[in-house]
Amino acid sequence: MDHTQSVENSASPKQAGLHRVGWVNTFVAAAASSLYVAVKCNFSWPKPADSAIAIAGAVSFWVLTALIALALLGVTIVRGRRWSWSIVAIPVLVACAIMVAAVGRPHFDKYRTQFEDVAQQLLQEPRDPDSDGYRRDLRIADSISPTPM
Image (cartoon, rainbow, N blue to C red; front, side, top):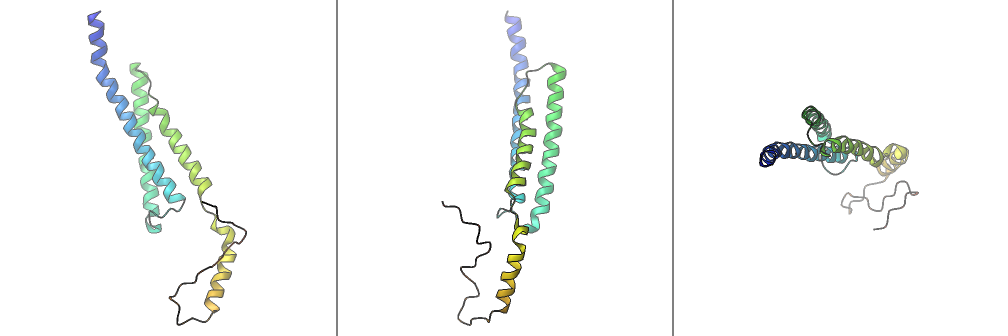
């Protein structure tokens, strides 16, 4: 009995190492997913000029994490090791990020004509020498009501 316990204990650090790699890989996929959602939903960061670089980085990390997850899955199957949920978490995170980005994306094209009308009105108004250059209480798409906090 002592011999089997020593065999189980010797395999345990390797298995724990694989689980750690899997969970670190999952956290990297979560970070890449957060970056992707931030870019696609037009949050304040990153700047619009950096959005293509940020999307490319997120997709690159997704590919990297997918390759690592496939390698972990292969090791798990070939060696008959205990299966880890971190392998499934990566595709779920990526799918959720893509869905959130698709649903949460603002649709400015719907109000483009109203934006253009307001821009033309602003260009035609005489400039007020006492103003600070900003126009306040500007309303576009009056049918949209602000959400109460």
